[in-house]
Length: 227
Image (cartoon, rainbow, N blue to C red; front, side):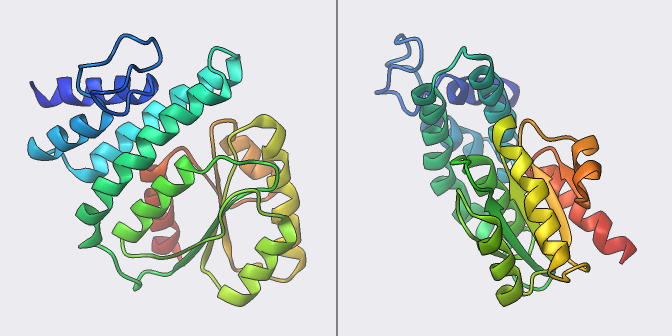
């Protein structure tokens, strides 16, 4: 199997919620074929960079998010794909650990109130740690006041806000406003998630919109270069 085929099959496996060869997947016909876990191991054996594998995770989950919002996928279907990524992250994290550190700055991250999505956030966390950032994860469904309190206590250089749904991304504006009202004007605020955009980031006063984990790293580095 070529690297291109491995990447293609891995993305498809995640979209289909096919965790391993014993699992039937979304269409009930994938039992006996390599699942996400096997394909991640294959990708690593083939020398595919763990960060490139994380990019595949992002792209697959973006497609899952679109299917969920369109009604093609129900919550159990989305969670099956999320489970694939969550389990696969256990394999990848040790591979990225060698690059971890705390010298580049502190990043506080949370999924905003009303939203229970955390797969994209968790991928970003792993990427940030691998790139040398110290990360504090507040989890999911986090109220604005709790985020502000954590900013006050943790004194991060960056704050990341995640939301998967259009109904919850509006909470981001509330969080940004509260952070600024509390006087933390020097903290760089990053937002991300399927329904968000550059335009929305500007509208609510966030510093950067991030498409995925790799884009988050690039945007932070851009911020560091000009600071």
